[in-house]
Length: 606
Image (cartoon, rainbow, N blue to C red; front, side, top):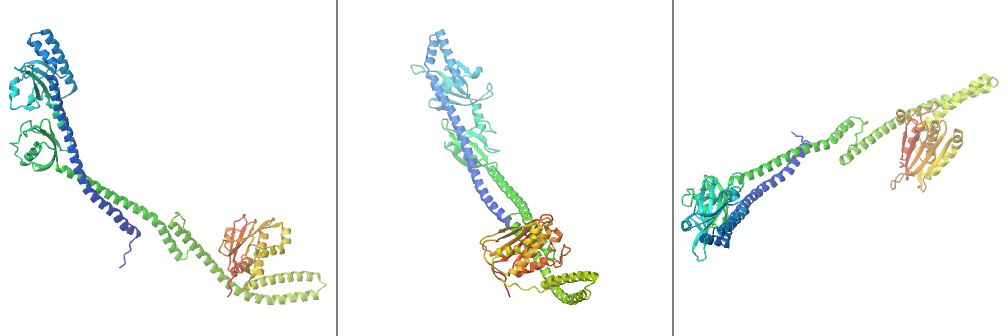
């Protein structure tokens, strides 16, 4: 059993794999490359954010150390202590105002300080300034006890306390203090900057990586200082129950920068961490590994959607393409089927300028040629049949006509004195002569002699034919206008037969030019290299109607009262005997154009 596969299905089977397979392959490798790239980008984003925040926090403590060193080195602070020691109230007050102004300037430069204080060894604040008019931190710090406390961190002469939960601040405060020594080197008090740790918490919580990523901060002992779930100091290196988390914290305590995978509550995560060097702390940003896969799934979904959309667009494109391509083909198939059934009166409109348009034009030319060939074949069969019939009838008619002619001659001689008999015998003789001419034309048509070609000048044949009819043309008011091509080659033709063709055409033109006019004669080479010459005869007469034009070359078809209808069929036969062609173009009221094409080499004779 033979299965018929349409061109549309073939296009689908060819184009869809051609389009979709490369997209799928590229999509697969794109997914792999994108997953790796997403991993790198997320890790890079983690590291960039954690390093940036770590540097900011490090800078806060560095500035705090510089500010403390600056304040304790101020001469006005020594002057203030001496003025109070010697009870110089006015000078002490003046120095205090200068210090308060300076403290306010320092507070205005940074949002991370809550208050700045100068206290004596007993913990009494001698000078205390809060931010923006707020009350300074009120908890007293015993100077010697604070400096000697093992819980406090000492960095380059700066003492930093643990986090203090301040009800007054409603948040955590970090005391950063530097001892103040007077000239003899004895401890005189403390300069304290109460660091607003809530601002640092905001910095850390402001890190956003992924949907469920978060950041946390641990100190040099592994204690959690900032965490989105746990309060400060809840966990330290000794009580982490998860060994994976403990391993991460140990890596963070090394003071380096890096990434580490760990597991928390059965979920795989990756953390990027960076040190806060001045405090020996470490900041980490963590994100679940699942989010890496989510990004990859999003990319995979996008690729699949792209492939599906491409497939749909390809189906639509193939449908439109096949419809536009196959529509002319279907028209050609339908026309071919009608042609096979014998319908030659059809022509497909040309709607494109591509190969299908060329195919349609070729089909139309083929149909026209077949139609013309069929008409010529039918006409040839008619001519053969009519020739045989006409030859027989002409012989049968001519003998009685000759007898009748002789009888009329005898009657005219016998009754020469009878005017009535002479008149009607003359009329009968004239009609017998006219019938003889018709019979002679029929015999000539039936027994048309083959041409006897010889080298001849076509222009000369045209001019000689015009000379024979010059007087009649002058009487009718018809002018001959010649546009004869120069340099035409000599042609093999039968001059007498071609003259007969021209005589028939000129006589027909005379009949069409009832009120006079012009007849144009044009000779020219048809196309260089084709070895063919065109002879064109045009008139400005009444023209031929469309229904009559199809029959003008049929034998005995005529629109003239005294015509035989054999002039054009005879002319067509002569031209075709010369291996040429005769074409007639005419419209009613617009004149007639007859084009004769003759080969230069002449007819091919058997």
